[in-house]
Length: 134
Image (tube, rainbow, N blue to C red):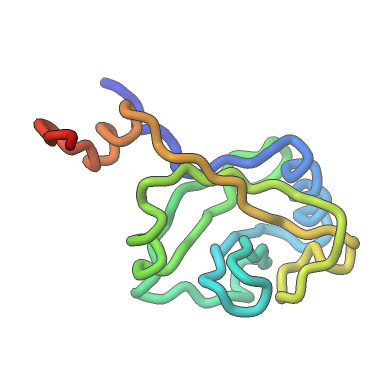
């Protein structure tokens, strides 16, 4: 049985920050912002500080050594625009303008994206078989 690929991952630098944040804030989660506050940034919260609703979908779970699994959510409407992309959560210097808990550290999470490759499209049921190219 083939394992379904992940839609989301984290860089080593972002994983280091997540370990630090988890040590001081407990279990964490992300919600991929849909354009409010800091544009379209991944917002990190202690579990329970952001309410996930029926219109949010679970993109995947990050498994960062030294932390509990970190779930990553996005609104269903936004997912329709991003469903063909793979997301990597990274961290850079600078403060974002949102409510994500890394801001006091002088850092901000951001998304790096790429288009899904054929095998990922197939695994997620997004491949278009028999499509005719112009």
